[in-house]
Length: 171
Image (cartoon, rainbow, N blue to C red; front, top):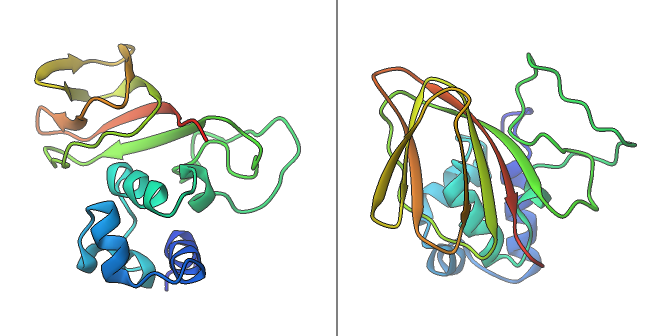
């Protein structure tokens, strides 16, 4: 396992604690067994959609898999730090701020989950598909939406893009 990636170890630990097999988790989360095995072994880092589905299937909030340990407020993440979670170390939070670098033209399956999301395009161009509607976000643009509606995003224009998102999922 990659020492930088503790997500897979946490997924495996919660899955095993619940007495679930990888096949059980795949069925409950709609994430393939192959993808879950790759996450648990540390071969890959998860995209936010599959990680959200896995967290929900395990009865956990998204941040459970991204936190390292408690840090006192304020939580500061510097621009050069490679971190998906922008609140790692804050276990009592009610929302999950994340930074996502979207590879050029890579697509992700639509997701939905109970809660809300706020997304800001930092650089590049991002296509947000919400329900059946397509919206292009450029640097500085934002979107706020009910995340129960199926949605996905991807970088467009042949270049990667960075988004900052705040996800709220009720307990």
